[in-house]
Length: 85
Image (cartoon, rainbow, N blue to C red; front, side, top):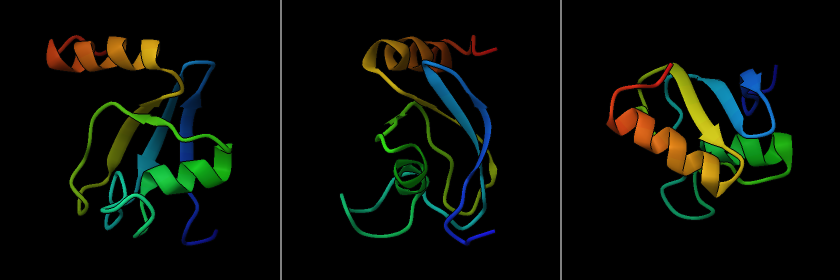
């Protein structure tokens, strides 16, 4: 596997859930600089996913992105209210 690959755990019309590896940022430090999960997904999906939450660069785990603003609002509210399932 390429070092710039990203494993998709789940994908549907609204969501993309990935397995974020340790050592990779959730989003780039600058719009186009540095490796990140967002940039890997752009390369894999051809769209820029919306970040719903973050994990520290050194933390690995499941990371949720959405494909449109309505889904982002819903997921962000669920994280804020601790009701994500």
